[in-house]
Image (cartoon, rainbow, N blue to C red; front, side):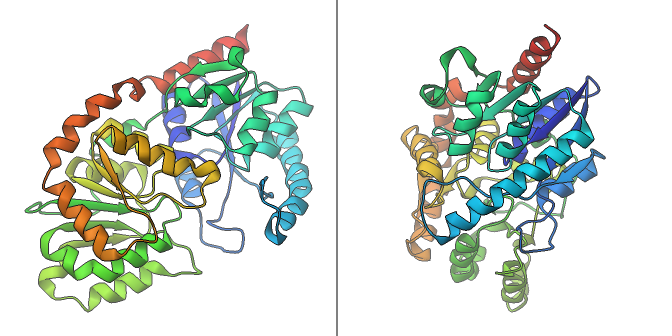
Amino acid sequence: MKILITGGHLSPALAVIEELGSRASVVFVGRKYALDQEKNFSLEYLEIKKRQIPFYHLQSGRLTRLLNLKSLLNLIKIPFGLYRAFKIFLKVKPDLVLSFGGYLGFPVCFAAFILKKPIFIHEQTIKPGLSNRLVGLMAKKIFLAFPEAKKYFTPAKVVLSGNPVRKNIFQVNKKPFDLKKNRPVIYIAGGSLGSHSINLLVAKILPKLLEKYIVIHQTGNVSKYNDFKTLSQIRDKLTNELKKNYFLKTHFFTDELGYIYSICDLLVGRSGANTAFELLAAKIPAIFIPLPWSAGKEQLMHAQLFQKKGTAEILEQSQAAEKLLEIIAKVLSNLKYYKNNFKNLELLDRKNAAEIILQTILSQHSS
């Protein structure tokens, strides 16, 4: 059996691929480049190629509820995306599709629907985006991370699976650097592309952070901003005493994350569903800086849920960098309190999510 995996959420896709093993062959459809206008390879391309899985690049427009010039240009791109998806589908000839949401999932699933191939989707967020809600009408089964998302789909199709988390985050497989932990460790991450806004905040307070903490910083590699170069230049001007507390990289691969999570005391970053579930699994408190324009304010909703349960704090992107310093000090001085509160989120912590998804797919396909 051949499964085509696609969609915008890489982490759960990798967890399912890991769980699948040799039970079926896999092909992956995604973005080869970080952004359409660039030639920097995306994290999903690098991760999939490392696993020697066939990767097919797809460009398409995004479905959006907004009406402006950018959204109109996106609408024009959608037919081209559908055409490319059909070409890939006819070349690959998969038996079924498993989509992890996002705008690339729509053309692939539409091609599968026209060609009468089974479609399965996984929804990571509390409030599903437009693409997954439309694909849900075509899907055979819909796997959910949050029970709150159930109201957006046909109840008979829904399986509350939880969110698949990569097993690697519990294993120290590769150390990307040698770190002597003699003070609290903060991991700053802005998602697979990085976050320019978060990087700007960090740049303003970096020397003050390094006086008290060890900082591991994932910047992303978007050429438009060149944040890695900028932060490297700031680092080079620091004293040797401060430099040794700063570990900077564009991306951390899956086999490196286990080490980072094993030594990390606090995460500062976006509140996408996959980040939230990885922190839940690893029991690491967070300061979430929700993406202000995330679909349906999903990132804010995730952050508010974790804050309500006592495992995280929220910083608005527009707030001052000094406020971030203040909240970091607050969380790290009350670390035991935040860690103990993860028991309040136990209902979301489904450790067998990937197996639930695969058992359902394999049983449905064979029946």
